[in-house]
Length: 359
Image: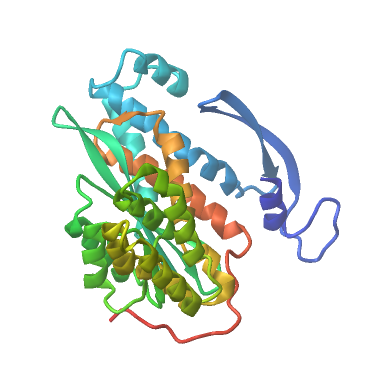
């Protein structure tokens, strides 16, 4: 908040400059309620007025979303015995449905604007899904939360979008991917994801012709289902890693051919699976060597999902899909803002024309 004030005034402490836009005027205490209880912040002030630090608002966004999710559980009568006590601790007192609706409308407006913001050139696109528990018509259902992230031409990571639905089938994925295109997504040169059938069909429909890198981590996990004996798993995993860690594609393909030959008699189903599926994890060799380590898997996006899980497990079961999307969006918006302020994730040495652009 102090840095924001300095930028607003265009001078540092005790600095003289003809560019000065005003004068610092001490601090004003502001107490907010968080999961850690009440915290009092000293909010920087300026003599001329008209300044309020955005950092304060960003830091409280996911707190409000969490409060609303818990409040809706209580208001709709689907909470556990302890929810009332939690609500009173977080929100200060009991809440009414009117209060919840008013607060939700204010927060939803901000989050919807972020989810619908225009996109631009994204070189690498990462796709993944996770599941949350939600109460639908009295039943506990699994809600599929689709998340897209990407790396732009400046090498910065972005959370591109999020969508929630009761299905991860093709229609949900296709609608989600098409919404990214509608918002201006272009310039995609590689898509990285796992092999979910619905995602694969939607990817082909929306991004036909764009190279696809199948997540190497998921590939190695999938291979274990074809290993005939448990004691062979470590050996097979090591052989797969040898293929993935090859210095170039030609060498990787040679290692793969040796591996298929090695297992074609003692594990024919495994050998057949390796020959058909492992090549889908070698697309990364066609891209710059400096980028390959970060393009081999969707682990970066899965770490984002783990952060979402860490925050959403406080709620446990969401009262509806809107409450889930609200909290997840607030968390992802914070992560996206952090990425924008961080150093570049990748470095591009030269400009290249995009392989694909929206119509």
